[in-house]
Image 1 (cartoon, rainbow, N blue to C red):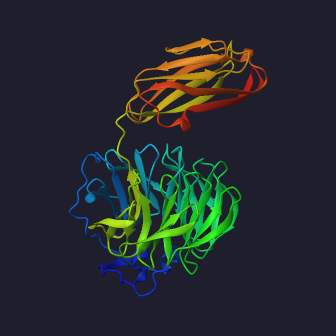
Image 2: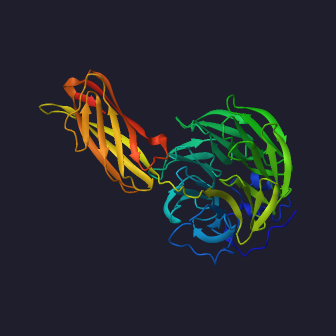
Image 3: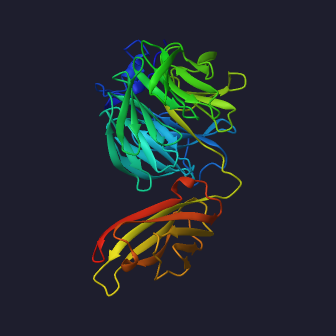
Length: 486
């Protein structure tokens, strides 16, 4: 087994990459990512020459978390060169980019935090406190939530990405390592390294609804693009990948993959899966139709994670023990390039090249407030259109559906009413800005009981890339015209 390169040591918590020094067996990596005994902290090396500019890359980039460098390395995937670094928290491990491609979340293992990076400027815009020793992070398909596996306190932190704040903490199994969300967003799968299980989280209630027994010391977990299966890398004695049927949450087969499987991911088609084997310094390529290994690709020392680029032409494996990234040509399953100059590379995520077409995502919100004690009591509604970018909104139309028998009054400028439908037209809205329109519904027109009003984005320019946040609703309960709660 290759030894860990020597580094200057200072006092501080142990870091996973150095656990092989003195332990003699790399297979302990996944198991030892739980809270561990004090050892030494590694100093920054290899990144000092890289500077952070005031703007992000123009083309496709890869963000690589440098566990020993307290920074991300930005790789230009066009040239496969490290072009700059971004300082984050202590011991960054996991990294994920949101579906809108505007933000990257980075877990800082020693800080109990997540750094939020604006991918358009490569600037850290927020730091979110989470649980102990956060490892992996994954976004919901809508981008509205991010899920963080906290290996140090057996929980998953749920981050509301609109506020960059934790809104729920979900207890799971021992030493959670990996987390993946289904394409529907309904379920999150968490690999529990310390208890040889996978926790299945219902994202609507933030509760564990099933616990699946898998192999020894599960580390990485990935859900197929179809959502039919989850692959779990069992890092220790089993040396396998467990295949979970997501419809039944049962293991249907185990795939033998070599020595110390650690990270796992699918290509965009779901036809291939890639698994890093830390014990044998290679990446296994799996045909997902047969659940069998079809190729073995030697890479650098101690491969931790592997991800396929957006074009599907290359898989990038981070080699934490020799400070490199191996670029695998997916058509030949051979290493075409080795990228050097990193410092304990671990997590990796891609920022796809911006589309030539402009896009601006509108997040629709609707709130209601009773106005009682007036001559004509009413419900006051505020309809908000928040532009989450990346471009400025030039125009937008939001439509509101009222309950049967009601009508709207007090319409804001730009809003019109026809029967039970209110239509509001919005002008320009800058990136990260909001615009509001208001209207009223007289209480004497309402039937007693629940009053639900819904809103929907019906048109906007430029194109809205995210339909998941295009609608909203507000509910009130009317006991009488003088007793209403919302």
